[in-house]
Amino acid sequence: MSRIVTSQGEAQEQAVKGAFEKLGVFEEGMKEYLPGGASFTNDENLGLLDILMVATFGPHKAHEEVFGIKLMDPERYPLLFSWITALNEHPLMKEIQPPYDKLVELLQHFKPTNQATGTESH
Image (cartoon, rainbow, N blue to C red; front, side, top):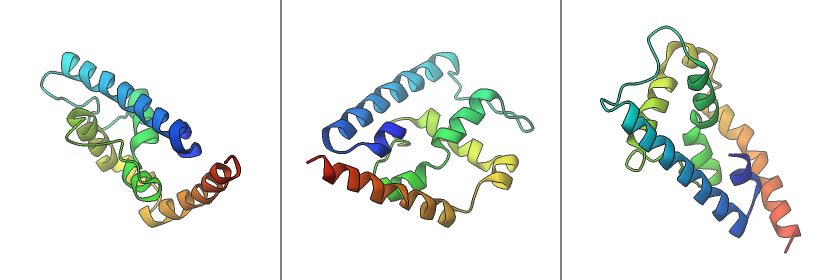
């Protein structure tokens, strides 16, 4: 995610392409090992992989709003999308996630820096 957010132009396009490829591999692995579409989560505990995934992709809607890049596409990655959605609905995550508007406001601070960096290099 950091390469996507901190780069511009062709470098950003390459970072997005790389992320799509990795998400595709992940999605295919889930299809192979979880043919029923079962989630890794249970009702009580989150595993390490759950925590890593929700930390990276949990705020995907805020990332999309601020940076204009939609990585978590339910049509392209239905199993990953459903997993992230389930994680975001987990009671623990609801308790510790920042309010959406505050997260968008925080991410906005990264955007001007990103754009200023991109314009200086041209």
